[in-house]
Structure formats: structure tokens, C-alpha cells
Image (tube, rainbow over all chains, first blue to last red; front, side, top):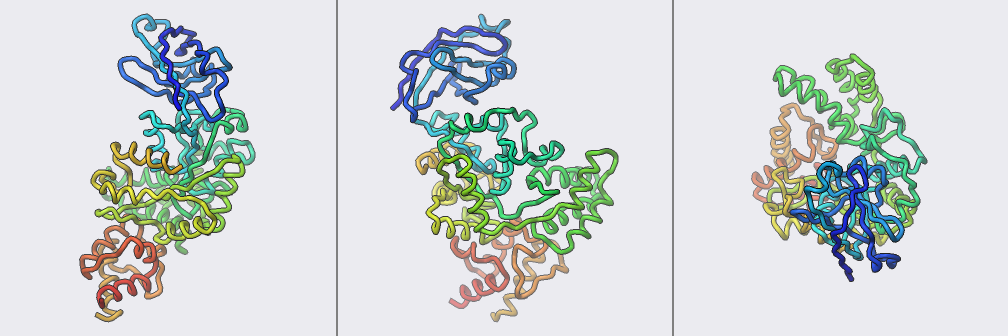
Length: 379
Length: 81
């Protein structure tokens, strides 16, 4: 199903960009075929973003590329300056038409990393990253957060700029046409990392970014001076017990935590407000599936779920958190006919030593391609 | 070993792992709501429980251990078999 073509006639076209002519066989491809580009220099590399803006390719480089109509491929082989080094390097380009699926992942690194690796290894999958307008992956954890980000990108519900960092909204989000860009997507892959949303003034904050912002400084202070344990332990109590576990003492933890936190500028004031006003919202299974269904409707694309495992036991047994979350989601998915890809079966099969990093949570680099390939087979 | 003895041992193990001697755990507590019992502590607690009671929680059982009564019931069933 793959047509390959090798071209060496590349021309500098300003900035970091190069252009080449598209061979006839790649013009007017059937809808189920997509173009993939492999750059050959001394090594083989796969380009990152397709359909990038021409100006971005020239200015940013870094693997952005695009093709328009039937004539031009604009690409950025390297972040070197073409005008100064073009004659010193020789590049060639392999164009390939494949039936690779273009998937849009929602979730964290346990879904993005396998897909990215599979694509990088040349497997039949493309990770759609155009919606974020940057090379960054937009990690989100709960279906509510997934929806919030997409609605922000669509312009339906804008997240206040001051909270972008705490919601993992890229700072260089461009104003791409949502409909046009989303048309490239074949399927959604949705990971559900939890069922508690942390809400501040109507916006769901990303757990990791909030933890970085509030627990990070406390952790640093504790590392520098063990006498600062009070700040650290209070921040932990506020975040894990007060917010995640919805402990009734949250307001007291917040008051105590504020005594430790600096208040010298607007950024500090925002963090103080967040500590005082944020609250947890536990999302029930029915709502989770309603949110997932809404995502599918927005894109008008099929979707599959990828189960999330918070931790693994040393022998590879998966632990969901909260403990019953995976079982509940699986039951509801079966009832609704939604497919779930369940990575723990692979972790057990390949053994945790091969599959997992020391934290017993993230996948080993060598395992990413394996799991990526299995996801491709699954979808 | 009766249920109270199991409860006492569970309480002791959880308190030690979490590092809180005054930890409040009740016979009807939900695990997710117990202060300090997070996903990291959960691994260590389960390992310690398995080692102390000489039992093994199966994958299908682990998801069901979401409260103290369920945990006590699971351990009691295993040690009595």
C-alpha cells in the first residue's frame, strides 16, 4: 500500500525552508492515503508537523513541513541557516504515501510517547499536533480538561490568558482554522488519568502544572533547608488531601499554606487566590462518558480509550487510582460498546523490568515502540 | 485471626507506611479518602499487607479494594482459605 519516491533536487527557499517538486504519483491521492516525508542526511529522520504555515517553517524550522496543491513541498531539513550552510550539506528526501492513521491523542505522556515513538520509527501512524499550533504536546488528564482545551482552541470557551500555563495551553497557540485542521484527523485516542477535576473560577487546572506551581517552590525550599518541612508538608496536605481527596480540612490547609507562600507580585497573588479558591470536582462515570462522547461529536470521528495505570506493583500488577476507577470505566465502556486498549496486559507480558522505568509508572524508552505498535494494531 | 485483629494489623501497617502514628482509620473508611494514602503509598501498603498476611491480591481483586471493609473482607477470605 506504500508508494515511495526518492528525490535529491532540493532548493533553498529562504530561512530554514527548502522546496522540492511533488512527483506526479503523489498528486490527488485517495483520501485514505497520506504523505509522509523522511529526510536523509547522515541519518534518517521523520519530519514532525505536516501542514505547517510557510512562514513558520521559514522562521521556526525544526522539522515543520507542508505541501500545497500538486507542486511544492516546503520543508525544513535543519535548524541551520540555509543561506550559509546549504552548500555544505547534502540532503535527500523520501516521500511515501501510506495509509497511516492520523490520530489525535488526549492524555499524558503514557499515550503521547508511544504514539510519537511509533511515528518516529516509521510505523503507520501520524500524531496530529496541528491544533496546538506548536511542537508541544498539550497534556490534559480528565475528559473535562480535554474538552476545555479543545473548546479553547475552537474559540468556544476561552481560558483566561493568566491561566494558560496552569492549563497546559501552549503560549504560541496559533489561530489555525479548527475545521480545516481537524479534517486531517482519522481518530481520537483518549486516556482518562483521573476523575477529580481541580476547578478555579470555572477553569479546570492541570494537576501537574498546579503541583509544579504550588508544591514546586515548597519542595525547593525543603531541599535547600530541612527546617522548611512545614511549608512542604502543608503544601502536600493541601494538594493531595485537601484537593485530590476533597478533605473537609482543605480551607484550614489553605490558610496554613498561605503563611508560607511569598506575596511579592501579581503572580504570587494569583497563586494565593488559587490556594484559597480552588476546589475539587469529582466526576462520575456517566459524566465522563458524556464528555468523551462530546469530544467525538466535536470532531465527528471515532474514538477509542486507552486505560491509564497510576502505578504498577513490582511484579507488574496494575494499580488504578482511585482503586476502582479502571474497573468502573471498563464496565461502562463495555456497556456502551466503547473499545479500551489496556496496556497492563503488555507490561505483564514483557515484564515490568523491560516495560517500565524505575518509577513503575512510565514506559522504558525501548518499550515505547512496542506499545505504540500494539496501539496501531488495536485501532 | 478475627476481623478486629486484622483491622489492628492493617491500621499499624498503613500508619507506618504513611508515617503518621495518629492516623485515623475507621472500619467504614474509603481508601481514597484516608489522609496520606495516595497512589505511591498504595503500592507500599499492598506489598506490606501481602508480606505480613502471607497473601497475594489478584489483579481483579485490587480494583475492588477501595475501602477498609472490602480490604478486611479480602484478607479474611484469603487467610481463612
